[in-house]
Amino acid sequence: MTGLFISGTDTGVGKTIVSSGLTRYARRLGINCVGIKPVETGCPVKNGLLEPVDGRILWEAGDKVLSLDECAPYRFTMPAAPFRAAAMEDSSLSVADIVEHILTVSEDADLVIVEGAGGLMTPVEDKKLMIDIINDLKFPTLLVGRLALGTINHSILSIEALQNRQIPVKGLALCSSQKMSGPEEEYTPGDLARIVHGIPIVVLPFLEDDDQANSEKIADAMSMNWPKSFMDSLLGM
Ligand SMILES: Nc1ncnc2c1ncn2[C@@H]1O[C@H](COP(=O)(O)OP(=O)(O)OP(=O)(O)O)[C@@H](O)[C@H]1O
Ligand SMILES: [Mg+2]
Image 1 (cartoon, rainbow, N blue to C red):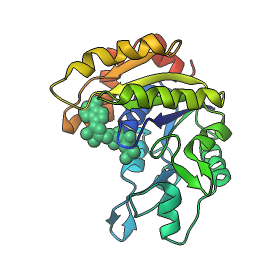
Image 2: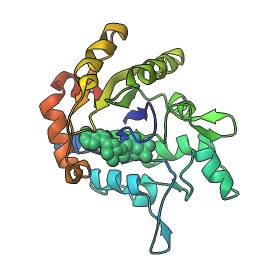
Image 3: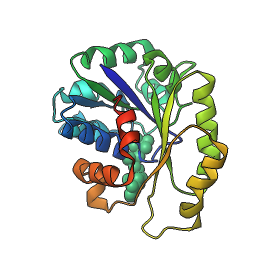
Image 4: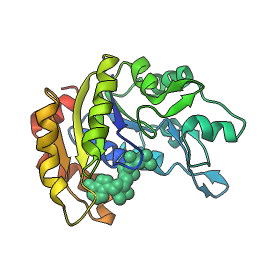
């Protein structure tokens, strides 16, 4: 089993969009790929249960090979970092348990794509952070950022943190979230590439609202805009 961790420069940058598109893309190639969102906070209540919005998207992109509970095991109501959201419910999370869950449920898969919560330094357990989960999983990561003002700073800080822990960085995916692009869209990838060496930088173009939740459309956009060799490397091929 191969693993890929989708980490973010921040919350709300496009991790779910990228994770679901990649899961779909891999499955189209006949790879038994599953997507997991191990910790999700800010879950609404639906039919008396906490609804894992991201987890459900990944579950569906993975053709429901796993159960929804396997794809989204830890869910909390409060829209906060996992540590705080759990504490608000007099509960706590264990990085070791999260890692064990991911490795166990994905045993029979060819590829597991794991979406983080928040950014790399988001608290999960006491003094343990999201980046500790990646470190313990020993998965390479694809960093996702928004193609907007501020992303150069956030991206470089995140890449340095990953490299300081010897976590392989497979690439940086910048998600365009504005229909009308500004100058930052034009210059940011190139300006980042001048500073960050050896890490492929790709752009996911703007997707209309309906397409953002459609893994087929995201996979189409990826295969049209991201080099095949880059996609292969993400899938561990
Ligand atoms: N390619 C894109 N086209 C259009 N909008 C985008 C694109 N990528 C990201 N967005 C915008 O960013 C928002 C957040 O995306 P997404 O839910 O994937 O982020 P996330 O990093 O998974 O967030 P969270 O931290 O809550 O898990 C989307 O709802 C959308 O508005
Ligand atoms: Mg998400």
